[in-house]
Amino acid sequence: MALPRLPVLPDRTGTRQGLAGGDDPATHSPRRAGALTVGLGDIILLPIHTAAFPCRWQSVTGGFHSGMPPVSPGMAPEERGGETGNRGNDVGTGRGCRRWPRPLPTTTPHSRSPRPAAPPPGRQGEPRAAATIRKEPSRGGRGRAGDAGGAGAMAQQVEQLRADGVDKEVLREGTGPLPDFRDGTKATFHYRTLRCGDEETPVDDSRARGKPMELIAGKKFKLPVWEAALRTMRPGERARFRCDAKHVVLYPLVSKSLRNIAAGKDPLEGQRHCCSIAQMHEHYSLGYPDLDELQKNPQPLIFDIEVLKVEPPGSYQQDPWAMTDEEKLQAVPQIHKEGNELYRQGKVPEAAAKYYDAIACLKNLQMKEQPGSPDWIELDQKITPLLLNYCQCKLQCEEYYEVLDHCSSILNKYEDNVKAYFKRGKAHAAVWNVAEAQADFAKVLALDPSLRPVVSKELRSLEARLREKDAEDKIRFKGIFSQ
Image 1 (cartoon, helix red, strand yellow):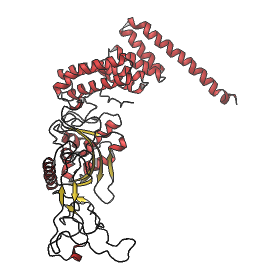
Image 2 (cartoon, helix red, strand yellow):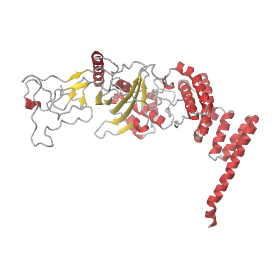
Image 3 (spheres, rainbow, N blue to C red):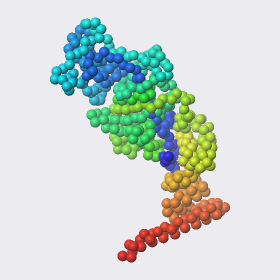
Image 4 (tube, helix red, strand yellow):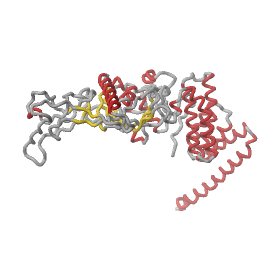
């Protein structure tokens, strides 16, 4: 499996992850995409007059919107029509979102006259009860009381979201009890970002990138509305959240980091040692026209979220981006050791992934230091050997241009690094940069004459490849010059 390119940061600091809580000033969220889906998981029993009026919208209080006026006890049967909900609330139809379609007519394709309304349940003339929710035991063994508590907590959370300008529409219910989402809970989910409006133009889609999003509760993710939305969902649930502009002001910065990571770029590209708001105002362009437009003109957005799984704290292996600063420093030597062992076993891509994680931990810590300060330099000196190991893996994976980038970034700071010159020389030779390769190998000999046998071997290999290439070129162009 190919690894994303590690960002090159010659004159500044940063980290590939950029998505961990409290880590990336743009996103504070995980490097890899994850998913979290929360659905209701309750069976809804509705007193229905006719099957022609399906309920399609869940309100924030647990009621349903059917597009029909509420039923009063004194209504005649013909006035009730096909109403199926307990209220006539207009959830989700305001704030620029599209209005939910009106109920279907009561005439079927095989009949020419409306079907008579079914008699209401109970005794004649007795008013119908409002929509009710039947609680079923969850798969985990929780009974009706536990489910009732979860549904009540979810309804309260959704009501709070609605009051704060976030409307929820359930597209598919989830299963099991509602997770408690205490700090450290990890949610893995797919998301799709849409503009509000009739066309609902897509902005981002994690499925198109092939990776779900991961979010750990309590890590101060830069889009708090995502964490708030996930707290109302069960695993397997899919829902849409229409969010007022005030909740998505920083979405362009978050989206940029997510896109950069998906493209193998530096998630902190263009950022410096300052807060996110300062970065947003300082940099006119984010490098993506659609994000530039959202940054200049904040507007409501719709997030289509599907929760894949929810893992409580301690049930999953913590990724480097989710660690505290102290945990990162303690983890780096162990990650480095694991990478070396994998490399000795010939598992080069896996070793590169370990070196990548170790570099990310240190880069994240370095981002919090003033460039050039003693702490910054100390961290940079720990990063350099890891980066050289990473380049060695990339040489074997024939990803030569990434080696050129990283070795050049090292040499910009440490002009006497023999290993960086040697690896860059091999990469130059592999891509037919003959003069550059010879210059790097000459520098290696000047800095460490004891490496002459190794350098001579590389130069002989380069000369042999050049002779083969010249012979191939003569054969290839022979017919052209003979005409």
